[in-house]
Image (cartoon, rainbow, N blue to C red; front, top):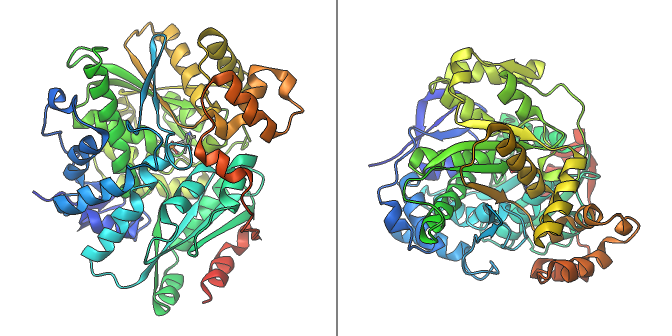
Length: 495
Ligand SMILES: *Cc1c(COP(=O)(O)O)cnc(C)c1O
């Protein structure tokens, strides 16, 4: 049976999975969603003995039904190989009574690698299947992690180019170095004088620009997206929630069918939406707990039913969650609106015009699977220190937001189900914030000396990704104003 995809803003046209991956965003500005969320067709008991790659196949084959078995397995094997520093790909680490699902063992030591190491292969396979003859130009906006992970994934992949925009003062030193030292003849990186939302809006505007698309086509190019709005990003992320539950079962941490809670440090709402899809596929998850930093637009939304981005944008120590427009929420809105594309479109138009919208009471009731919390800067830092002192485990700032929210959720709700925390970055990536959280004596220290300190206190070896940038050459220095993004792209592509 073939599963088709529709736009959240127009249900008339259906496309195949490979078409949706190739296009990224629907032509009406909506996001592609599967007509229905498929159920797993094997038992948890069978899943429990599978490798990550085998689990990936069992999950992804249900969504990407127009891929042959050979095509899909080929993509999976190319993605989840020795680029990851552990055979488990996504190890589940038990610290006291909580499970940390470590999603940062890939090339750029953050969870974006989980999807971005496979997306280029899904995309070039999709292009082949659809006889697309144009060179694919990936445009991406990044709050730090996506950009590098996308560049690493697409670097020197035949038939593709990639241009990444990041906020000049909105990413960590390590993140910036990772990006500006990226090799690959098809890779460009631009620092914009603005914040992540400016970068994201600029990229979205280019995708919706019909004139620009025509100009590109004339020169043999077509845009696609590696941002988490691409269904080819979302589907691979479902895999690790299935894998995590299977591992809990295999390790006798849960009984078959026992419900767990999942806590996800959230920005663009892609990772937690993948967990929601996993639940709907049949994984026994009770609550999806959405953890925000001080940019708590999602927390307020789950509390009140009003999404309101009209507020101050705060730069925090968890920059990959410094987001006021969570693009993937549109897919959840569409579901709780009863797959009503007209209603979804109207709300998203309100968001664009006024910066806010309010859902109906009916819709709000359908959000019962979700809980939400947030951690401010002090709480995030204090939690890193407390867990380190108590257990020796060092976590990064994003993971700490989730870990704090997990603890306060448990205290307030008295819900004592087992909790899996999505651990989204290596502490090495945010070393300055992590080390000063543990001891303020590190405040004046430079980021690079701290990497060594971290290695000593955590007893976890410095990842390859960090060693590489220590003496790599800066290859990219391009900067531009927010209103010059389109001209910059034209300049790079020489059109
Ligand atoms: C991207 C990112 C997040 C947020 O994930 P979303 O899918 O955008 O909600 C959290 N932590 C880290 C380290 C990230 O890179």
